[in-house]
Length: 448
Image 1 (cartoon, rainbow, N blue to C red):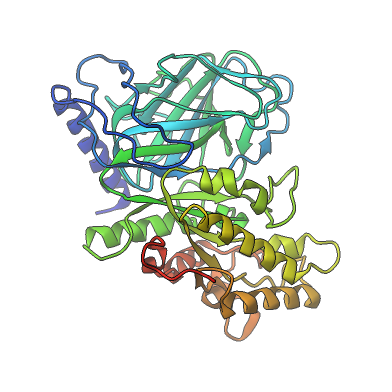
Image 2: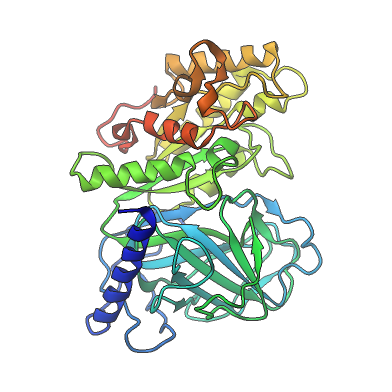
């Protein structure tokens, strides 16, 4: 079965489940996810548009992250008008499915309160375009109200809504803002086309009003689902290589996407491997130690938000450090970078989270390459391989390097800039991960 036919079948199943389940929907299950994004119980779901026939089955299982992204900064050019008078329809891709969903909206980089008067969530009608699958559109509420105001620097989590969300599918989240909040909190390099409409069109199922397109995600930073498919969340924390800036757009070929596929396949086969949703918290240009106004807070400064603040996190894969080398005007200190990585591990352990760390991949031929920087990369990788930094290691360097020139990526794994992988390179990275290494800390040895 082709991927497009499989997706069409998923949409048909969703519509059938929605139609048959109106009479049996009872209530959402209690929230089992730890941390600040979860409460003691679920609020009553808001009545969806469309009336009868639009409810989902009773929800069981646990809350997990099925998609997420890291806010990077204020979108250039939006300082004055923001997205005032327009509807943003973000398109995101799920790693696991569920029977209820909720979203997180962020005004982290806004300078004025962000007021959202209308918001909806729906399963997308197909792999491309802003249209929604029949019967899946849901109005979102926040504390029972349709309108929410998010203060500058803040975020808000919606009430859960009953909706059958399939795994490996696209979901659209639409928000209408009547006034500007200042700079729009966004994530560039989404590698996913999203949409914009003039006026309020959050409940437009056809998508015809969405004549504008964007390569950014705006305001939306998380999509959680409640269901039995997963027991927790694994976060991929990294830079542009994790962000997937050279992956084919609208094709979901970043290495965390391929990892999600592997985890689902293993779960369906009955393998004794973790059952996780996958959340990609990569930021292009991100570093372990230093903040950058265009490339987000450092790994140290955003770890609490982008890892500890996600839902039901059991493990994190850390792939950071290359930009600490490339963006240092002198010679980066490998000991300081390794110490920063150890600090991330300590913070994860304090919350019972397993840490898988990666070696740093080659960049010979890239404009930032020098023999001194290569020496720093080698010293960091030696420290990682020797142990004492992470709980376990995935050797991305070994997986991608050219055996005839270990300073370089293998040609078939090189996107062309000699730093970022090709689609095949991203797939190879995901395949290098031992899924059993993602098991949580219970009963496993930890770094001492």
